[in-house]
Image: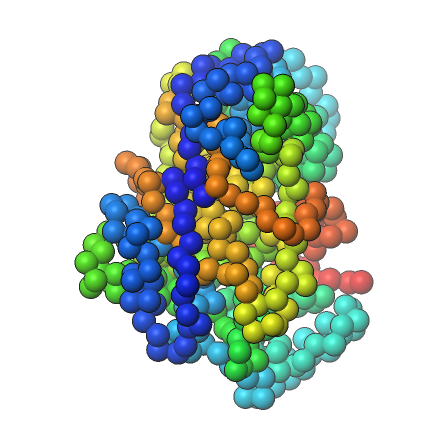
Amino acid sequence: MELTPVTDLPEIRPGDDLAALIAGRADDLGLGLEGAVLTVASTVVSKAEGRTANLEDYAVSGRAEEIAARIEEVAGEEKDPRFAQAVLEESTELLIEAPFLLTETRFGHITVNAGIDRSNVPDHDLLLLPKRPTESAERIRRGFEDRGYDDVAVIVTDTSGRPFRHGQRGVALGWAGMPASRDWRGERDRDGRELGVTVQSVVDELAAAANLVTGEGADGNPAVVVRDWEFGDLEGSDELFRSVEDDLIRQALREWRFEP
Amino acid sequence: MELTPVTDLPEIRPGDDLAALIAGRADDLGLGLEGAVLTVASTVVSKAEGRTANLEDYAVSGRAEEIAARIEEVAGEEKDPRFAQAVLEESTELLIEAPFLLTETRFGHITVNAGIDRSNVPDHDLLLLPKRPTESAERIRRGFEDRGYDDVAVIVTDTSGRPFRHGQRGVALGWAGMPASRDWRGERDRDGRELGVTVQSVVDELAAAANLVTGEGADGNPAVVVRDWEFGDLEGSDELFRSVEDDLIRQALREWRFEP
């Protein structure tokens, strides 16, 4: 398996056609090969889709005031209620309110501050996550198809923290042209015993792998071509985000409130 | 970045020298190149270290009886109290007791059943995780050094489920010859703004990437060579496993009990 960043992408602006910008630069990297995967950071997808916002445009609700005040109280850190409002508007559920906001975005991803980015946006205060990342991935995939790249899977990625382990790692937000996971159930080991492993989240593993070569900041290359990798002859599934019913941690958080 | 599985490793037996077995097969894959990383699945590390066990050897405590009974009660699934005992002996804390056992292993990793594997062991009932995976990684790294591979980082990996997202992904259990994460704090983006991202867990991302090419079961290749990847000129840290103090989810779980 080989991963190569797509270099020299320009600063992305609203309305930019990412497939066109990437295809021209990724031909030599194997984008046209059978089974190629293209990962693209949600930051540039959001920029192309105009998902920027300014704090002054948010009408602060009582709920946002309450959250900002509580974060100030327990974390001793000033919190702009307009930012809390922005997070609320991007979220369907608050899993943790304080000392930081952990929420479920409208498309099911669980992350701090609904993934809203306050760096990386030249002319605005905020960069929101793409509204429907799987649709974004599908759109980019079709853009490649229109240019004769018939078989490119596309993954829209982000970086995110997680429980139990320090640090952030790359994760998938949306995907097209491949399933999210492959299912090893029923497969057997060398001795014929059924495997303990069940479902492997390949889109998250590809996002993590890509994040190793994108770099960040000034040297960042938001798109990566993966080649010489095979999904293989296994069942696939598109279930990635756990619902409350499938997640004991989410259930525990519903009954819990941070007390300093 | 390029990842290549090491093929044709024999079935690993207690006392086997993994560095010797891998080095002979990985020379052409770039193991000798500057900055190479070798990932190796904990299953083969455990086998080499003789970390197998049999259910009949466990003296079942009252606590293990209690846990097995409660899992049967709430999950309606028969649970061998000897297996619960094995999990207890590998763990320092139970985060969830039922409907399944989520525990912290003695080296800080949080996973279901303390990572004990019931497939993949020909002559025993159970395969335990390595006792101290970072020491295992260090031992393998020194084994490479003794054979003239001076600069190989080694990561002992496993696959594990996680909150919020379905499916398993590769994770690092232990590492040597490189830090666990790289720290982007203070770095700036194209426009000179400080980055939102903080600490990147590179050992987990490498473990996830490697898991894409190892395969599982009969076709499984437990070791992978990563080449043409650079840690870069950034600060590193070896903090990977969160303590209770650094993890609100762990705090919430301490106050929670599953009720069906």
